[in-house]
Image (cartoon, rainbow, N blue to C red; front, side, top):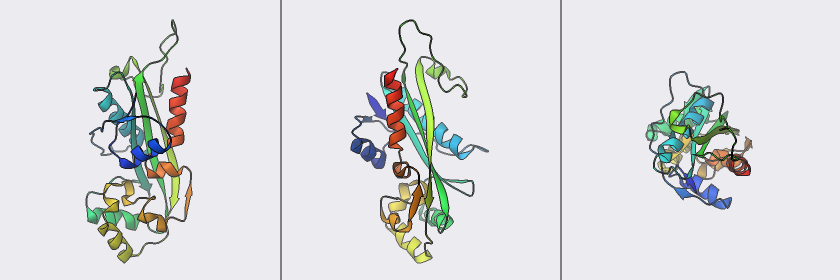
Length: 209
């Protein structure tokens, strides 16, 4: 069984709309970026940590971890801490193009033909003793998002709706914030919170071996 290591209703809806069956068990991990960590590495690391946290309780399942961040001026924007923080993030994004990066991790029992050697997954990453008998794959998707200028009053009104408060970068492209997004380059579902095409490809590759 595929287990989504997230309580995000957006990820739930995206997987459901794509016809992918899954269960939900949220992971609780510290999402603070490490010092000097690149945005892509941060997103992939957090996705991996979420997947492994849930795998400990679901060792027979395939666990999907994901983490979405917004990047502008090489600054990582996660979920806002409060309304003031949300307004700060929106001012940074106003009138500019930024990146949305979602790290994805699939981990579960290794599938291999009888008599074959255990394949080495993610060879560029350090060995993890917790996953020696597991197959662990990480990847990420990046989408460029262009925002028009947002006035201070619009920012105040938007923050007051509460929509920004549990979203990376303090906005929801599928919600009110869509009025300020004239263009994206890349995967739309990635901006919502989960790159469905990438996830499906990873699942298909895993099951085809």
